[in-house]
Length: 203
Image 1 (cartoon, rainbow, N blue to C red):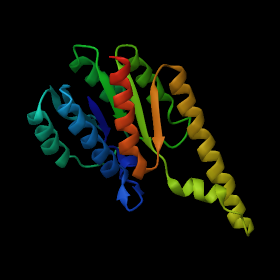
Image 2 (cartoon, rainbow, N blue to C red; image 1 turned 30 degrees about the horizontal axis):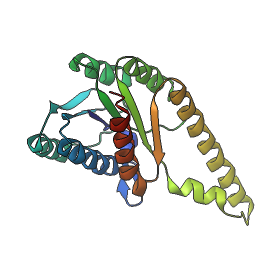
Image 3 (tube, rainbow, N blue to C red; image 1 turned 60 degrees about the vertical axis):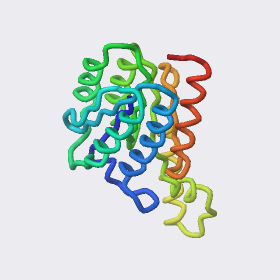
């Protein structure tokens, strides 16, 4: 089951497209290969409240359904409610599943509730957490600052990257598989992780 956050953070652009668009492209790539491999595949979206849901189904018909559902997804201006959204998902899933959660966060403080609810989900399912890294952060920290403003930007960018790594580290310690990559890399990294999970029979 691919879970897509449609809250306001997913409207932020990366490499010319909203985060949500990058997430949907990666989700559809995974869904296509999952359906071809004979797995049942479904989709769930949420922001401040639960949204679209397509129950896991097998075959090419399942992928066509996901195409139709994902085409109707829109990001909202609302804060994402992880408690309401992920609780609703857990009530809908009747068997242990691979759950791919595509979302994002700004810092470790605001990510606390997200991490708590992902941990609850991971107690029953195999969870892959997918976040989109802003390539500009790496570029800013790698550049040689030529002014005080550039130095300040580099310090802020480095702080944000350290916070992201701290959150990802905490999720990994809770048994959650994490992918944090640039938009151009996210689809293939997710597909490779899915193939690894299949090979190791983790679900």
